[in-house]
Length: 325
Image (tube, rainbow, N blue to C red; front, side, top):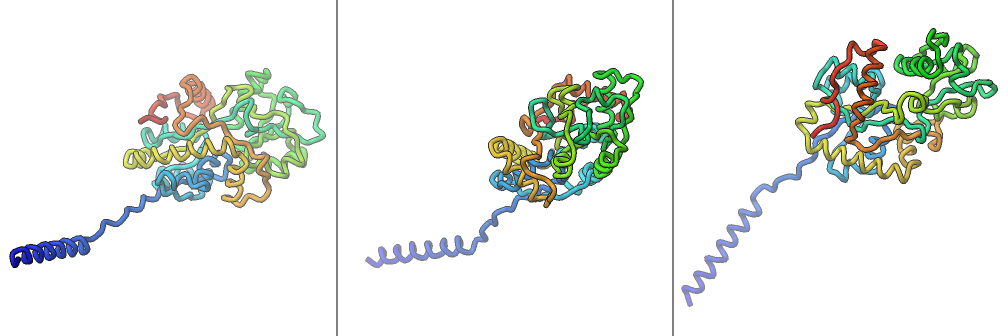
């Protein structure tokens, strides 16, 4: 009886000690995912990224994203400096030039573009009482452009599709889109190339008329792949799992925006506090998926066009620029 009692006490004592050990052992804290810094440009191409954040798709995938506003001139420098880990879509001339100067430092994701049948992303805009109906009517006239690359595209279309070999058409580059509107209003421009989100502004919609929509897709390539999101390659290498989850969340966003486009556009308007734009007027870019790589034939033709136009120093192999596992 005494022996049984001692055994019982021993069991209780051991149980007590185990309880103390378990109670006193420090519990491992739940790790908080590192912040993924994404530089976003106030441009319609950023909608999938913004909508993924607004709808909670990044959080559902366990990715802790912080959206950081960047200007066009600081998009790529901020990525190369390491101020951000990824950026929302930039244009291919900028991406290709940066990659050529910094081989292996950047990698594309979320390639997007425009198509003949898709939403209006680029438009040739004229005054409402103008007699111009197509680009053919503008040969020999004055057209405003917001960037060098837009001018190059326009020149190629005018030359190869409308016979303007002598460059009789004046293409005037005005960096500020407000100057395009001013030029149309005062008559110093016969037409202007306007993109999103400026094309969706109430001023453009109410005071002017679009005569050519998505002219790059209409006359150059359809679809015309115009740009992509860009990631810092060192960051991708060090955070591969997080990167894949980030891309999966973007795909979630693309699927949702396909069925609820107005919700995606409204998220963009809220994020940037845009006042002069109607959600129904904003065009959505064509995005097959976050890992899509454009056909090699398109990439080769684009690089040749940019090299011929002196926007690239020479043609080069771009295969390392696009998504690979």
